[in-house]
Length: 601
Ligand code: OXD
Ligand code: MN
Image (cartoon, rainbow, N blue to C red; front, side, top):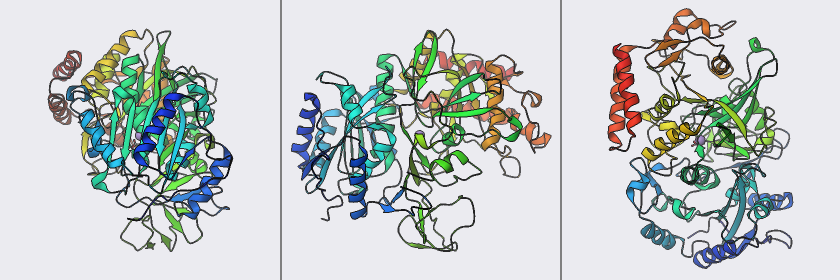
């Protein structure tokens, strides 16, 4: 069989930074004995190492160099067409009991799973290089920061991990020599990228991840979904903190008052756009800054929640990204970026559906085939991605490296809902906020394989990422609430409500600042609101809609509560809770009953 990842041979001084921690060395030895690589490459994260790996990747056609004038120092990678998104049906939580994984996860017995995976990994790296990638998640001096090691036979993974994490010597330093220190073990092998031999398995009790048979980011950049969310959420509950699928942004008013907001939206629902929002001209002097675009690790200090972004880069969805939707992202991905599955123009530039300007007359599509505007196929895969360092973001928050994290004034939940859910509303209190998160739903997107556009409940946007029983996760949220003397206010937003003509009612993008401003007004106790059965709702004059081209009817429709639609919604909340088979905490059931009762008042 063709070796899809041939070994590379590095000169002295590259690939030989061995850690000194014996536990790491023992583990690498064990995995090496099993996978039988040609050689071992110990990454140090240096510039020289990166240049060498890029050069080797170009030689092996793992990367295509893009036009240096148009996108400096940037590359394109094409994944196997059978391997373009997260695959939830082969993602497993391997805990001793099924109950521990809970009703929303695929469960697999640990001993059997190890033995199946070790079988697949046996000799899997023959003729390949085994890369050892040390990394940290979190700012270098944060108490929340954690160490991980990923073993992989994919150069694309190494290059992406260097963008997405703080990688190399920094992790060896943080870990030190204590063989009992906590660190995450991640093993990844492409195998032969066969969907039938593709498994993404998490062993939370062992702080271990094994991912085989895929080369797609969400399945193989083990720092991200696997460690920072699935294993992270498990550790967070045990250790009393929170690992959430949330962006973190800062909002600063013209007179210098600043708040930080964390927001959980399901995959591909605009977290990156919201985190990089540029306020419209009407909000002269207001500034939005990005702490993170996907993951928040939060802990309690002095009765408040403080958050850090554990990542070091953005792994964002490309199609739809434009100067209209996200100018900061466009500038960020204009250089030093690793693209996956976008189209390549005849000028070696990148192109995707939704990019500004006219489509190229000819391009090579994400599969490597000729493409013209008349082609039936998309030029870029709908889940094509960029990996770009957060340093590229001109709106990066100055406190992104702050070890203590940033204090969170508000938490926003949101989903993609064509109907029922108003533009924005506020929970009555923390537990009601937990209910809003627990019953969140969204139309599915291309970020995971499966049907697109189907409404599914996605509690706290963590359905595919909660590494333990979802009932215990809800309880953890409420326990956190009990420890908060100054809890963030909790909101729900929906930018995606449609009118009778099937068109979006809200302009979105930068105009979301108007909603954010109301959130901040509520935090500062200056914003008005009306009590509704679902929570505190702004009336049209509580929102700053000045200089916005929107008619009264659209605003009324955006903020309206349609009782008929909500009766259906309430029934779906019940069906969802029932489907979880009795794990939903009593307090959340009570919240549901109170919501039903408020509709009868
Ligand atoms: C992501 C996802 O890639 O949520 O961030 O799928
Ligand atoms: Mn995500």
